[in-house]
Length: 303
Image: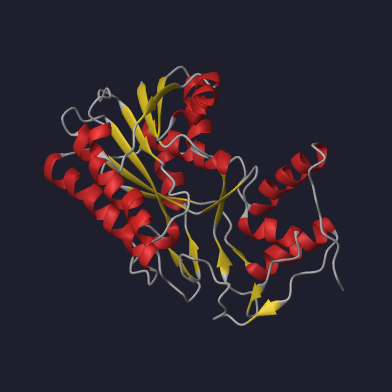
């Protein structure tokens, strides 16, 4: 297949490298040329444009079989978030509509589920998040699925959980530095997925996903904060972090939710088998990688 990855960063770069390894022709779109050599070394043909500026897209080729939109905002305020996660996909679809691909896959987020009661959620569950950033993602999903319903533009939504892996893992990095805090009694669930499995889920959805469908990309085992920190503590020889009130200002920018996200549809329809089916397998691999590289920096407990 002739593939375009819009946003060749933390997920897009290894995705492109894997697609190249599988024999596909891969183009990677970045905003600037700073990563040109990195893309070329992975076998990815670089393209440069800014998805928030549609005039920069017009000079590019647009005949692709598979297109993956996995752009990250990279900081900035609410308006930048809206530009990247809403206007960017909208303009990309408009640009591609002249010659639609066979599959257009958008990597969204499980933050669209606003549930706070610890219930299990699946793709058909209510999506009414409280956080403004998450409401933008809901709006994006609607503008991507409407073209499918109206003009059969082949959009697929992949709702991705919290990504961890090399150089990533919000709670893990805070724990190593003694900066982690448990929210209340630690019963709130965390939903995670290793970067390698995000890549695997995307490829599985490109191969077997049905246009117009939504799939949750998350591992098999949602885990409570308490159990996560207790496992990290036992593994690394540290105490669990102190607790703070659940309404603390330290809550995540996408808003506090408490839910268990199911991956059953993705596994049943796409037949994907996870490389890291739970956080223990994924973080064991990451801890070993850091240790072997001499990069495992554990700040001693202050107690």
